[in-house]
Amino acid sequence: MDIEAMLLGIRELRDGVRARNPPPEEGAPSSEDHIVYFALVRGTRPYLERIVHQINGSYEHGWYDASAVMVRRLVETLIIETFERNNLAMKIKDANGDFFLLGELITRLSAEPSFNLSRPVKKALPELKEVGDKSAHSRYFTAHRKDIEKLAPHLRVVVQELISLARLK
Image (cartoon, rainbow, N blue to C red; front, side, top):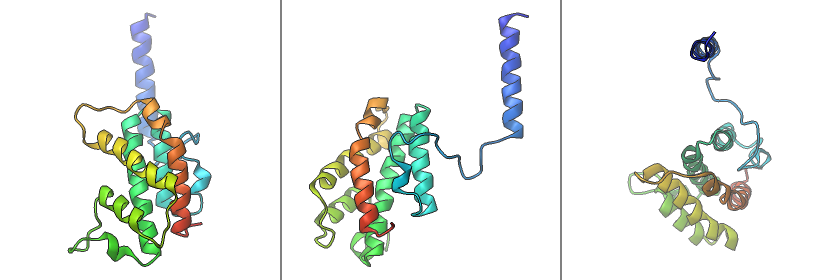
């Protein structure tokens, strides 16, 4: 049997297995906590847990832009959770009742005296936003492994502090 025929057989087998066993409807858990420790969000909200699995899972597979965009989504979601839990959601909505975009959410969060954000979180938020924005909106930027890895320590501090402020744990 030649190599080409063997590779074709392997592809057909893989495709057949995948057709009979598609990925889980709501997504699969990541196997490692590379970027966000799952323990930080375990028991909070199912959608936060799924976002963290997607951050870690996309990192595991080398899909760094996807990971960066999900980091951005996690930060945005946690900011909204924080304001809502503290009955301050009206401070982050426009005249139509829509939530502000992430840049304005960060500005409002940092300026809100009742939250008393730590310096590391205030410093990290714009950095997390920047990589997520580039991955989501730049035609020429593609995130690399190191772009995501350098976010991990900042993300840990931000996630832990916002979960605490939102009283999710």
